[in-house]
Amino acid sequence: MISIDLVYQTVKTLANTDVRGNAKPDEMRLLINLVVDEIIENYFSELEKAINRVNRGYGGTALENIPKRIREKVLYFLTEDTMTFTTPYFTFPNNYRYIDSITFNDIDIEECKNMREFKSIVNLQDTTPTESYPIYIQLGDKIKVAPSTINENVFISYLRSHLIAKWSFTEVLGNEVFNPSANDFQDIDLHSSELSNVILKTLLKLGISLKESDIVQYMTQNEQIEYAKTNQG
Figure (cartoon, rainbow, N blue to C red):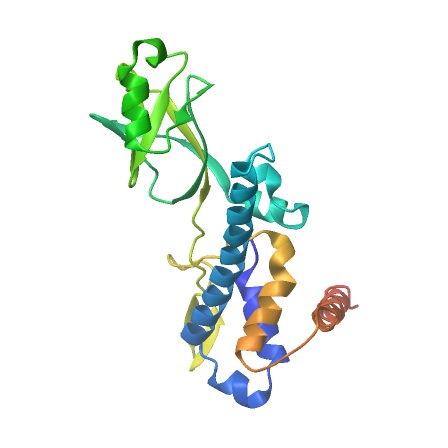
C-alpha cells in the first residue's frame, strides 16, 4: 500500500499556487485513481506479452515471463481463494483479473482452450478426466470442471483488481482535514515502490513536469524537517 495522504500532500505542495487552489479532494481522487489505472494497465500489457511468449513455446508461466523490473509489482496483486460451486459451475471471486492457476486438492486442473476440446476429452474413453487428472473450461465469470464428481475443494490463484483509493476528509472551519477513520478511506493499492511514479504522473496530469530526483529530494528534505520538529528541545 501507498499512503494516499502522502501522495495528496506532496502533490499539493509541489503544484503551483493556482493549481493547488483549484485541485479539490474529489478531483485529486479522480486523478490519482486514473494514474493507478494507467500503471496497472501497463502491468497487464507486459503480462499479455508474457502470455504470448509462453504460447510460442518459450517455457515457464506468464507470471514467470514478466520482466523482472515489474514482476514484484505484479505479484503484489497475487492472491488465492476458494471457488464457489453452484451446479454445474464454479464461480470466480468478484475481484479476479487474471487466472494464475486453478487446483483441486493441490492438483492442477488443466484448462481447455475451447468447448470442442473440453467435450472431446470428456467423451473419449482414453482421455476421460479423473480426479487425478481434471480439466476445466472457462465460461465468462465461471468454469466447468470435469469429472463432474468434483464439486468442492477447488482453489484459484489469481491477480486481483485493485481497491479504489480515497482521500477522506472532514471539514473544519471550511478546510479539508484528512480523516483516515472515515468508512470510505482507502490508501493507494499499489506496491510501495510506485510512490514516486504515482506522484510524478499525478503532477503531470496537472501540467507539472518533474523528475524522480526532484521528488526524492523534496521527500528527503521533508523527512529531515519532520525529524527536526520531533526532536526539537
